[in-house]
Length: 183
Image 1 (cartoon, one colour):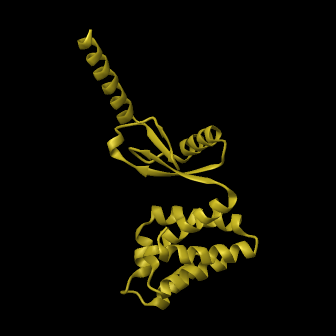
Image 2 (image 1 turned 90 degrees about the vertical axis):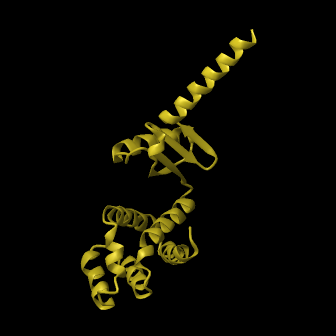
Image 3 (image 1 turned 180 degrees about the horizontal axis):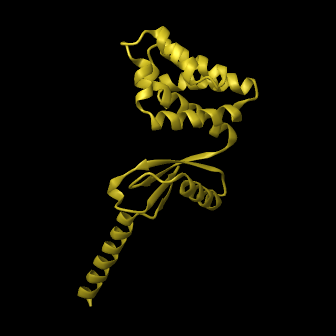
């Protein structure tokens, strides 16, 4: 979390915690995260100095018509302060605060290409079972893995990547070769 995004996220978190609507808001925030990730130029548009603030704020009311009013108001404040480029970070920080409150561990799953939602859900369920704890995974693209996935949760690493498997094979072969010369 960066200090700027965490302040906005914490303000929304405290507001929603007080009104007992953290879980509903978290679901909306997750949808907004997906929208921003699918449309990375949207925050750029909301931050553009070529468009008046009034027009950008009006855009929020039009685009986020079905979004909770307090979330819309937060987005407007962010625009007013010329910080629309931080929206994704604010929403991700809010999600982390709610996960911490709910006792959900967050982890990263590295893969060579984006993991489909259904596969990510299966992987999350499997890791949750292993960890004996609810887990939420975020997919990070890492072409150096060659194939497979690597999951990192706190200090636990589950490495099923092709790169890791090749390194293990190389190490085993080198150890075997070293042992044969000693005999």
